[in-house]
Length: 292
Image (cartoon, rainbow, N blue to C red; front, side, top):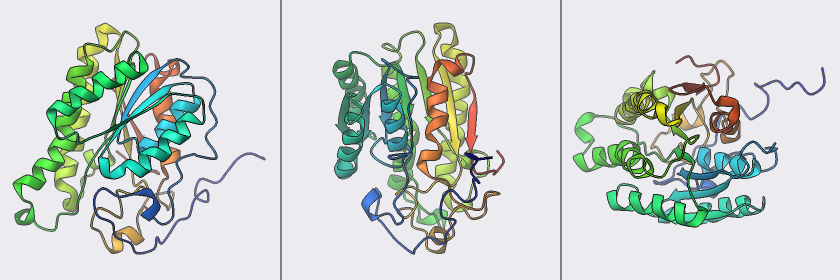
């Protein structure tokens, strides 16, 4: 039975050390360091010649997807906040180590005009765009609704929803037949936590976005799907504002631990690749056994 691994034992099951970060969280300040597949992901040429844009591609799930796409043969542009430049530079280094082109696009996706620029610069730098991964997100713990200002509510909505609309609206004109759009939604769309109510709202809306656009773009041969992660250990978690929840993060899953970004990469590669040519409008759960 060699080669078969126990998924409950692949990564530490906690507790995680107590830690706090401000938004946006950074990889070097996250303990233990998330596994993005740097030393484990092996490509098989599934995305040779493809041209990808990944929002939030500097760290966490976005970095894992960027590594996997590059090792599968794709060139990759990543959009990120300027404060995340150090993380983005490391992701670019990992992409370029595979002899693929890396394009860094620092800016704030809450700015409508910047979303148009992101698409334009990606197309200019890569010579096109056929894989659009809408992954950037913001969340914060909410103790009481009265404590959530309109500005803070706007931050969640614009980062998680408006930007996805703005990017897709611009990309629609340049995406070719055979292109794939992949949205990072969440188990929160189906099992919302009270202290993440606004984040959960956006994730539920993203599911509707996926299902609607799959129908709208189907006759053009453009597939639209989503990945719904469960509790995944990324810099976003210690930057959410939790205390004891960070220490016990992910232990309530059937597998008994949090997932790592590397464990999601294959889902995105599958949805982007020719293996999924008849898959559109789907939400693929990667939740450690938590049901959608």
